Image 1 (cartoon, rainbow, N blue to C red):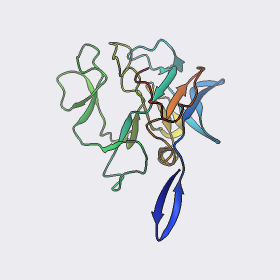
Image 2 (tube, helix red, strand yellow):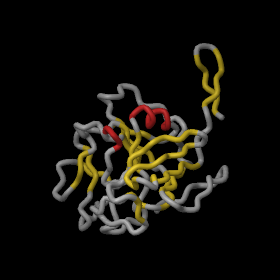
Image 3 (cartoon, rainbow, N blue to C red):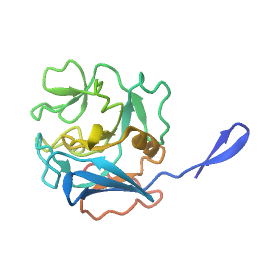
Length: 205
């Protein structure tokens, strides 16, 4: 655990979690429970539930184990960078993410406006006020296998996502403090174990 000097006294920063697990609800596959150590948080999933064979635009959350590459935050909503061991960058109004499967920049961050289809990260609805890249289909990138799979802020009532995992804003902000470069997220029924100390996470799905 890391030590933090705060107002003349030493406190301890909780160690980063090794593994998050996301379990779809048996009664509604578009909703689930995210297990983070002893904490269980409600979450939204893709409108098509969880699938192993994900495709672009199918509305499914990908089944598998993924690492957290880092993320973004809205500086007008968070004047101070949210606390997290993960690398976080302030979103700019011209930040986008390419979802055009035929583009060589597919499933990569891009600058807007883009000559091909891309979604904006600076959203009016607040879903990307805090957003983490789940490393799905990021190395190697396979065309048409899905793009922009994130952990982000949920809509009211945990309405379905387009394939991402989404949490309440306060839950996501608190969880960020326990997420580090070695944290992985397991979505659906998959075998996963926390990384051993000193072992580098694997890149890609």
